[in-house]
Length: 114
Image 1 (cartoon, one colour):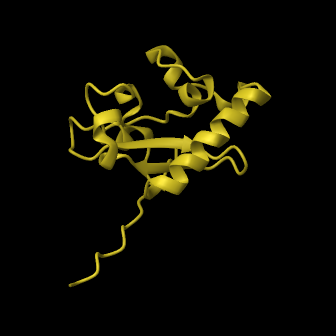
Image 2 (image 1 turned 90 degrees about the horizontal axis):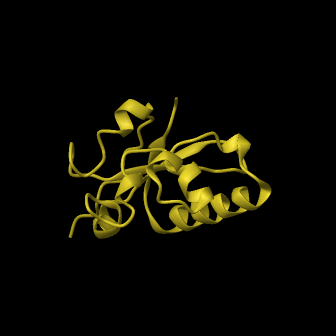
């Protein structure tokens, strides 16, 4: 049995990331900022399409930098994207928890370069 090829990582702009929403393309990617170094990683959430895909409870995060919404624990479309530098310490802790969860569970496919 042949081993799967390693996933090729690709840096993307927000406009490129937006295509990976489960509708425009079958893959579902979301970006999450690592509050410790300020870099925003892109994770492949396709394996959790029931949650992050179209019609899923977290589908509004698909194809976006979801850091602000995750930090705010908000499913309000207006809260999904925002300035993570303006978050409270508690919100930054929440964001860090989400980042660590995604980093341990989903493949990182690139970095957001906007």
